Length: 292
Length: 292
Image (cartoon, rainbow over all chains, first blue to last red):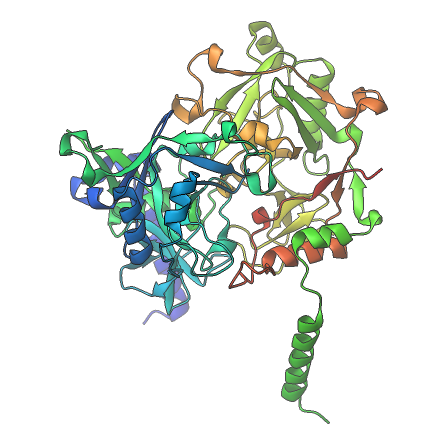
């Protein structure tokens, strides 16, 4: 019989040998090797196209987390509420925010009910990370979104590129008429304080480079400083030929797990030391054009 | 005699009462209340002014962490190496990087030795945070910089606005001729892999809004896309009247501790839930103009 301590040592040695023998894939190599079935096409019924003068921002919605707020947003989009709206605020290392500024539209807003969709009961679809997190007991991915949990509740994380519904002091005042996207270090203190509705999956750099507003909280001082939003459309409102063919890597696949590990412990000639851990907000969702 | 368990309960109750009675200061209120002695003027001998067409970026150097690399940088600055240099790279949610592109200057670079200043022995000047961190056993602040430690070594953290010396694959190839600043979610996997030399303390928004380069790693495709750097000077090279009068809040003061706590647990009418924890990279260094 092998004493436990020796067995443990043997197992560790074996693990090291196996690890050394495994191909040292970079994150890009993992993505290139992922089978087609590990990629998921964006659902056009839950994909927004926000068209700016500089190009298109693609936002994937999270109806599993914020169904009522997203129903509001879809209603607003159908009614062309965001046509000729504007980015009103850009605060450095924090968020950009957009809404409609026309008085007539502002009146219409008052009739739209806001909701508190800050968290939900924890779901079996949460794929957990082993890494410790400063803000949440555990973190991981649920579908295509970074999420946190305390074992009972589950919530989306304020990572770079996440999109939420701005609100006033009343917790239920976020109706979807004002939206924001995170452009800086993840402001995780906002988690469970406001409703996140989705994430930018393409065109984030069109938002992150917007000049910072000179006012408090990065508000612009004059309408001339706004960046205009031509319109926001649901992809499903466009003819299929006019939709962008995009896929994301499903987060419950072994490909995604390998991708996370390759980012957790970088294996290329540049790194002298692997981090050994990773923050959920340091794992961008891999998105690509659908291969022909 | 009071059993220990009861004493502990009493102490906890007392703490709660004291906490409830304490004024609920916001981060701004804490800063406004900080005594003058808690603020430290920037040392002109360790302050760089990088002048861009859009304005001035102020960088505070960290000679306690990277003395040799910083000696190189000061030598380069004295020799006007960075005059008419350029921002060559802007990668979304990562870094901007700058250097000299003139061939004559590139030759001069070859003579400059690079150093490995990725970490140092842990110092008694490290003020630790109680919050858990994904990447380091412990984090905190040392002087005016966010730092991590494993109990024996200490290193600067790759937070938003931190500045480092780019390097090639050879660990000692970072001489200071190429510098970068973090413009996105803290890329903490770089910690202990490259030499950080300081942080931007003013003008960060001039770097973060630069158009992202279209090439790999955010490199611009053509020189016409570069943002020119007029020059980089040490504040001490300028006449005192031409220096910016800036101060930062010393991180070993009770004011700084109160500021961190006010950011850890936001106490204003908007928040419905306090985070209860904070990431060192979510604590920007308070910087202000010296009061007259």
